[in-house]
Length: 454
Ligand code: GAP
Image 1 (cartoon, rainbow, N blue to C red):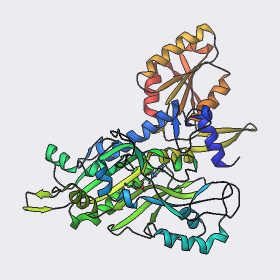
Image 2: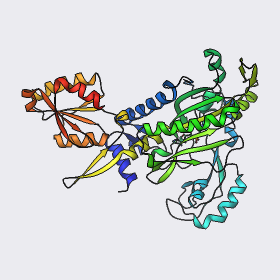
Image 3: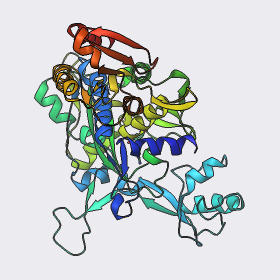
């Protein structure tokens, strides 16, 4: 099994991630998060919120709706320009994303290119491209395919010619609420607005597990400022996001910066933080300097002034924006990949998820050595006490060795075991996930001991 297969298997086996609609044969590009996955996901989102809202005086939160006026997607350019080039294998009907396939052989297909231009490049390199499913080289013409997902919300006609879209990115909800936030808070620029929420894209070829889905969550922060300080603040934001990624526990050697080679016409600069996924470095999040494009477009689109009034200098201007945009699922995938460790213990392979303690789904497992009645009652008492303070799990099924392995695989930093001796010495064994060392700790001191360690 390669690393990718091992990670996918662990995610399913231990309740992190399941394929959507699995009992019906699955639903492509959509994933469900199990009991461990939802905890990990929430911890990642809370970590981001802490860094991007709670630690900052100059950033506030927002929770805008998934459905918005279709006019928003016209003004932002998504109805016309938000597309990927697609070709279909004529042998097995598998769809390929032409820009990604060309990138793999070192050819750049710019998103600004017309269908005609991409077809020309694709034809020139067709002999080097094989269908990843059947291996044949018989492709259709390249077509540009819009990624916005349509719905019939509020439309009771047959033709649905003005569809409401499921949002393709969360930041549009931030742009269209900029004026509301300024008017209702009286905050001054520079000001950031952050939000976490679902986004939907009709991805042509959703592959690579959680990396590219059709339904996913974004964590986006849009920072509104005067043009004079845009690039200075942009550098600060890049540095801040790098620090936050390290604080999440990602190893520095598995992270790197990559600058965009082809900037969209309005952008001043664009870099991605890339993570070393099982197939190599790929985009984890983007940090972009967007100029005044977004508010200018929405001002034109809605016909209202979206200028900011700077009282001190008696000036009006359209704010520029720098953004940080990260995917929740990609971050879940990155932290699991980073933490996945195999170790040789007494001739057997131990799989352990060395997640940062801040984000582990469970902090402490509380285990009776066996299912004997006299052990279960006091163990449950310890569980009830500790669970007030840390997220704990009680487990009494199977041998203690198997239970330790299960906790290792979900990344639980500490296992507390109540044994027969505990009845006499009023102490328990605490096992450390990483070193597997065991210490005897008095039950009365247990909470303090774990507080210090966690
Ligand atoms: N507002 C800017 C924006 O949406 P993007 O590069 O299209 O930019 C930002 O997306 C981030 O959202 C990506 O870096 C990635 O982490 C995540 N993302 C984008 N498409 C995704 C998909 N299909 N599945 C999972 N995550 C995705």
